Length: 186
Length: 186
DNA sequence: GCGAAGATACCGACCAGCCGGTATGTTTCC
DNA sequence: GGAAACATACCGGCTGGTCGGTATCTTCGC
Image 1 (cartoon, rainbow over the protein chains, first blue to last red):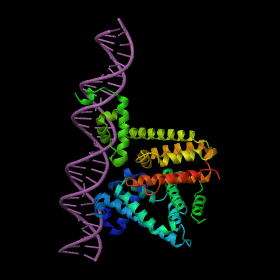
Image 2: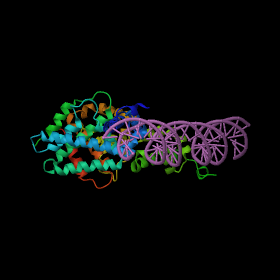
Image 3: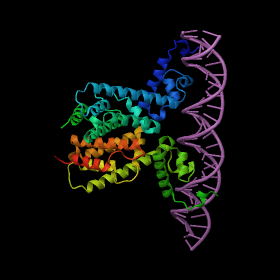
Image 4: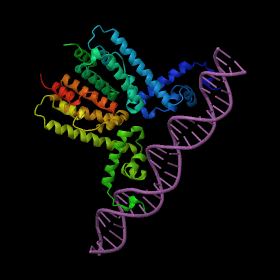
């Protein structure tokens, strides 16, 4: 009877769309408005439909978080693979992923990180990922000045999150270049 | 009849206590648990009592935010007054206030900033404050390397927020010294 | 100095709405 | 036909907020 019941069933597509819509809502309507109702509606599904794919709201956010984290992880791996220099390799990849001058519009992982700030479980998951990654690259990225650059990258990301709309006040490309330069061995 | 009706009326005290309790709840129970009920209870007042002082929850959070921002503003002014060097004076004060190595325990303004990230209105208020402050000190703190240090300070603050519990992994005092050094004219 | 009168501070009960979640029905795929 | 993929209906709980009332403070005429 309903449209959803008439069209071909593609559970994987629906599931992905739910995640995408959840991320979208998180980005431009805030965490407070991330309700199962809103997500389901945006994805063209009823609340019951959503709950079929994700047993609870918690599961939904966890899946969303895991997906974003996986993307970031892959992005960093790719950037590192293309970097011939050893020293500071991870830091450069981290900075590039964080600043994202190549991407238009706000970084979608901003949404992820807002959630991270709120939910203690997700916050710890992020911390674990970061620590593990740092441990993995301790031979090339443990220097204090690299740590500082990474801090700065987080700060830039934070500003991005704050700004949201309006033009970036400073030249991001130049900033990125400067930060990358700081990671080169003296 | 009730206790609150029997005791001496001290509206200013109650109002301040409401703000303090709100901040406390925000810090150790998260934004999601910051309800008017919880705040009122913690302050030893009924929900109606709270709504008497703050017409809405929004007004409460705004007042809380304004108070914290005022504190930060004063703290920075004090740090700047004690700094003889002109170049990077604001940046040093900002870094000192952000890292707060002299303070024990987590920075209470962390709570403020989490709210800032969430609420668009508060987020803009913060942005306005920061921009105004930067404009005010444009003669001494506009250099790119100072901007970078400020970014790093934000990054450190973010890490503080993430960590929440457990020991700080790195020496904050040393880090602070390094960052301050970076603000000195070459 | 003092008592009436109004303003202020607060309580306690209540409400509409929304939220996450469940239980159950109906359709579609294999 | 049976399981998966949804829709529909509904519930209990909690939320922010309103409202009428009461106790306390302050003001001011006298």
